[in-house]
Length: 451
Ligand code: PLP
Image 1: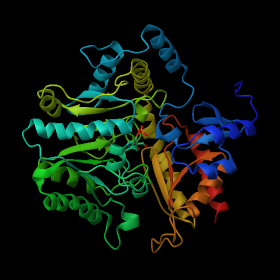
Image 2: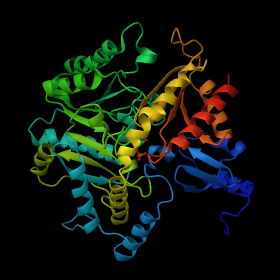
Image 3: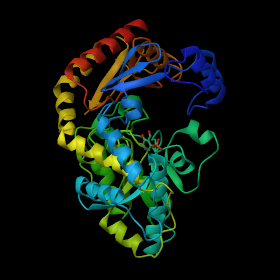
């Protein structure tokens, strides 16, 4: 029980394997290798227990937008803990951090997205959204409108609600999924577009929404949910025809549009929200991750005037979490937003992404293993292929070349993730041109080593 940063790595790994059950991990497999122990972070850099300096090309799990090591957030958290560490917002009470953060989010969010329901994470916020849109239609006198339509290979969290909205079959396979959720195809041109142009394919995939609505009956459908850019699915940047058509179809049938901005929110795509980058005005936005830059667990739903008015006119909304609007998490998020704004970090992200990173990223497509290299803001992906002219896929997507490339990156002190045959980046938004050079050098070296 005297474990600290100086405990030998092997001992830490042994205790980790004995007592810590990791998310999305093969427990027995990890026990054989031992997990890498991360001790501290500064800017875009991590230090592990063996003294390696690792460039974090994923900003943790797409969340440390302002970078590691910002003392201001720790100071705000300590002050708030001593002033009021906790109070609930359920029964006719509120507190200053929740009020201030909700008002700030209403100011930052586009259009009439003016109301915030807080949660502890992105998954919880999407569970809120399921109840919220079903309640909306109940209050409007159409309780049979309760189906949500989402996309195959989308990711919306791993609670039963979030995991069901998500279209990841390996998650559905472990424990099933809730009823009243339907899936349509993803706008993944490189993998699924065949001979169509990107624009034609984007329209075709968007029109699957209309087909699904007509198949189910519009009077049964409550909402459509999608990530502006599928993140965990492999950073799949949709053709430009896709989102305007999705929005047109939602409006035509009066279906609520939920943009899951858990990754794309707070600067990731070069604007405050991905909805702005792709020109849509959702009725609800899911937020988490970059909201606090991961310094405290917090998520939420930003809700339009109209949806809030309807649900708000129906008496009690029977939903909430002990930690909805947690004062310490809210104070930390507010300080994070202040830093993003005062230091023009969203503008920095846009400017460093285009052209500096974009030019270097595009050159990766010259590598013999790389089929396409795409980027929006500071969110990028490459696809690994045995034959780029034919847009060929490796026989087994999982566990082969993508995994090998990820392991080479890991060995070269660069964190890049792989999703099947796609390699992805999502670095802290404060990344500099010099750090981008390191990222590209290490990624290229790693690709060379698995060719
Ligand atoms: N929605 C999206 C788009 C995500 O990428 C994630 C997490 O990666 C979630 C929801 C779930 O968020 P959390 O892990 O905070 O529950």
